[in-house]
Image 1 (tube, rainbow, N blue to C red):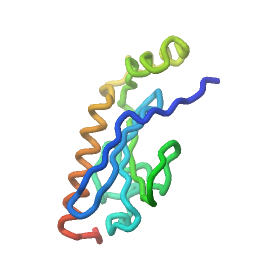
Image 2 (cartoon, rainbow, N blue to C red):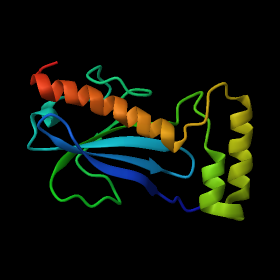
Image 3 (cartoon, rainbow, N blue to C red):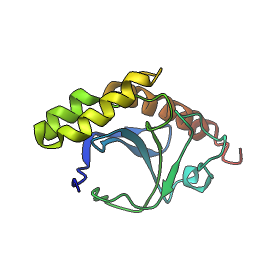
Image 4 (cartoon, helix red, strand yellow):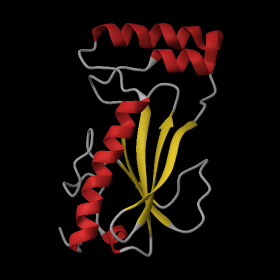
Length: 150
């Protein structure tokens, strides 16, 4: 069985209106996920995000936890995220080949077949950065108006 690599491709601290959050993108070798880490001492962390309509994200917010494996944080955060492994999301085979090379040729062939029948588009790192920025813009509005009871 193939080992599963987790690559943090992009990470940055972003200042909202009053709250500093961390935005990061993770590539799992098959698909990407985007995450925002909100400090636990922020009012924004009190909102429920998981499978709710508080924020609009690709496929919805499908992850909410206080930890993310492989990421060391300096304080406590509520981490929310979305994934790009929905029906219609194509796998980024070029990134997969760049990271794994030929060691996972069988996996690449399987994902190539899936991509051929999918009507969607590849979810590249740039897509996830844009999607994270969309979420950050929504969080900025919530943070700036102080409306934490949506």
